Amino acid sequence: MSETIFTKIINKEIPADILYEDEISLAFKDINPQAPMHFLVIPKKAIATINDIERQDCEVVGHLSWVAAKILKEHGLAEQGYRTVMNCNEYGGQTVYHIHLHVLAGKPLGWPPYSAKLKIE
Image 1: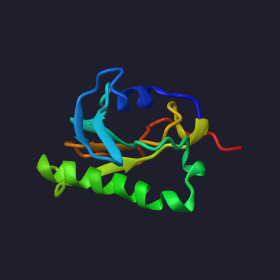
Image 2: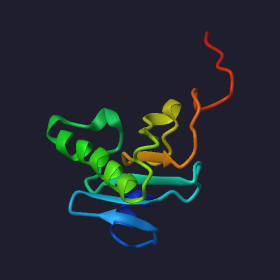
Image 3: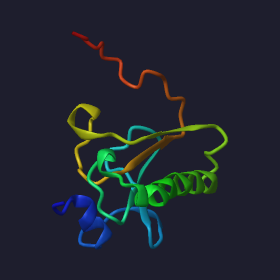
Image 4: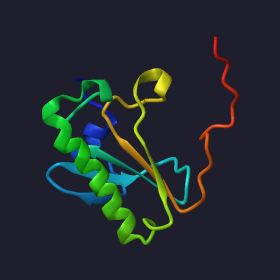
């Protein structure tokens, strides 16, 4: 897998507003927030897409959700609710090919997330 912007953030080559870090993961604020609280949780292990997750990665991927809940509890946002999203490939909206969990909170979030009408053929 080629180096991504997330690899540079993990390596501290470019700055990020870090909320949490441990040996497995890193969480930082999204640079283009879509909610009052919008951050990303990424594994330090480079995994390009959800399709590339292997059995031995299950603990790492589960850890991302645990980190999200921990941060939201610390900010008093867990109880009112939040959304987590992990995009996969082009049609799923993935733009950085290093898996990352988007976490959005701090306002009511509607469904579907986009108002654009889908044309299904």
